[in-house]
Image 1 (tube, rainbow, N blue to C red):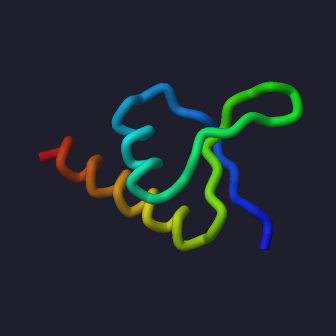
Image 2: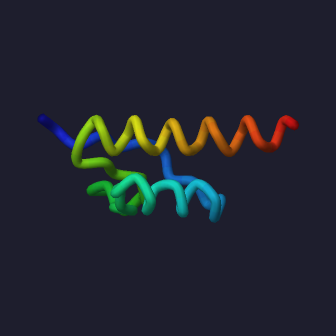
Length: 59
């Protein structure tokens, strides 16, 4: 399976969720930063954490 890459976020909360999920910050061949997940499970965990944070903001 190929790694999943999504657009980099400068938001420290997103970066914390990335680390909690087991993802890393990587760079494309052009030198652009991206969030990288080696497994789909890591990506799902990141999205769950991000969703929980958004739910808490909307209270």
